[in-house]
Image (tube, rainbow, N blue to C red):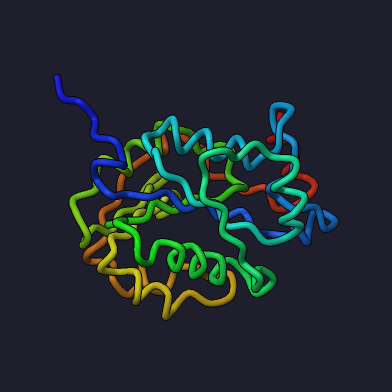
Length: 203
């Protein structure tokens, strides 16, 4: 029997992107949507921790003061993204910048608005980590999704290309031969909470 290493031992830090303002949700920040009677950001942090991430950085943007006041995020590093309105790319850059000067060797990135992705998918992606050259993504029926894991060797390249709402899409496309896909379609559902109709997925 093998013992799963914690992210304290491996140097992997989770980055939860939770800055979105919910424009198509009437301006309700996604972090504060209610799921199981608590803010959605709390659920997302719990998923990361249960999946094996002991260190979690949460990138905040829209109504960040309200998120800090309403959500229980003890033990997380809270990162403010003043440019959150520019899209997910700015939040990814802010998250990676928050790791500068730490002992982090990789970042596991997840999105606050995907409650169908649970600890099992996080654990699978973490298990594929091999070091600072790692480039790993969950896949759903062979299609790349979240969470994704970026070894530190890739951070500068990702930050340079993360613009608008594309995040790391361009970088991953350009480095497809180096990308390890980990199938998670049997343990997670990668839907997004983007519109009023999507709120049916929240409990």
